[in-house]
Length: 314
Ligand code: BDR
Ligand code: CA
Image (tube, rainbow, N blue to C red; front, side, top):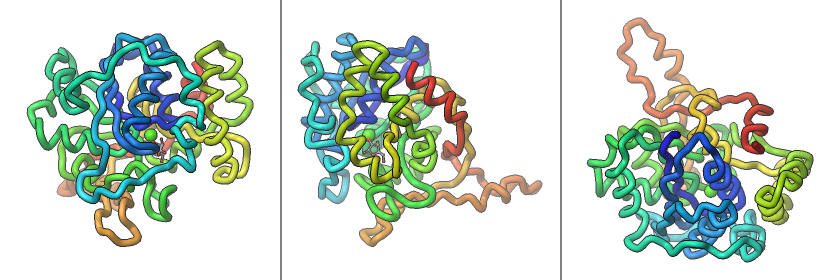
């Protein structure tokens, strides 16, 4: 099984993503690190531990990471989307954590898991990129242990937090820029343009709820999230952004990707946190001269939508 670490800010869709990985036989879930994001760090850490308890995975270590962004410390939240506790006000309905938080914090756990790994590790960041930027800046020696970083974030055609910016990137643009632009580790970016197309409807949620106790508990976390997406989608369904990215982390190639140069807008102006994906270069890349450097970031652009929904449900 493929070794995987998830960096997360649960979050309803994060909870689904964690469950997909925790219950999959295709991966060896080495650990989970948490970050501020949808709700403050204390809540995201407790939520991640509770979801692992729900999945019966007391073997998976959890460490808490950044409580604030790298440069501009103003906190962004999405409790209007995910509910006051990040799980539609229902976090406490999940089982209590089976295992204490690792001492030493997220970066230390990431370094020790990576250093001990015998094969390349996939990291799936599904929240703000603060922990990953800190890891790469402070411990460059671990880069060679990372196979791919599969990120949920960004928007090619606009955002969800602002007209320009998607939430995970907007929450810490300098960290996102460090990871996506300044570093050299292979990255896959799963933007909201694709995750929206993978939205699941009430029939899918009904099937999940009927599938057993874990499915029922996950479906029960969705009321506030569902209320938000009723407006955003114009129908009764939810967008499982983070589970789409984790599906790609688990099953490389389940999403179709194209390689483009990416920039992250870090000014304090109205486009702060926007991801600028330069799709003009694709044509240039085919240039026989071959002197155009292809983008380093693989952008997920398409998938078999029903196949992907079935994979997540399974
Ligand atoms: C991203 O923002 C968060 O609210 C979700 O958990 C997801 O990671 C979607 O824009
Ligand atoms: Ca998230």
